Image 1: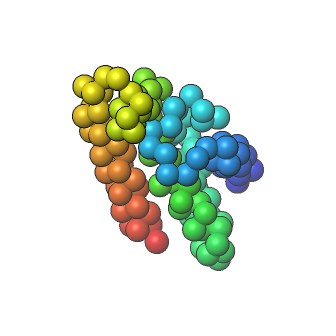
Image 2: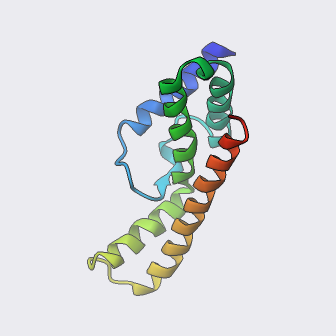
Image 3: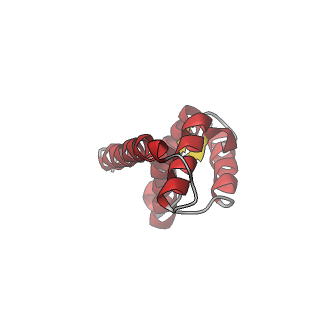
Length: 121
């Protein structure tokens, strides 16, 4: 189980190495495995390995929280179009509000992930 969890998290880490930090709404199709599988692997490693290694624990926790950034590809596209409108290069102002709602949902999911981790500390 340890080797499998390590591989899943390692592959996920490679994806994180190629995305821009601070971007909301990344397409889920970028992930090497389903979100639930990555989440389970991160939780396993946080529980089994990380308590003695605070730096590792912090990295795993950040990855766990950041997983909320990955959304359905159609939602990621809507967020990108809404961001374009907000920056003045998009042409459909009606996409800004739905994009903001999705970003708010992502923020709430990230906060929930932090709370989940606090319960396992």
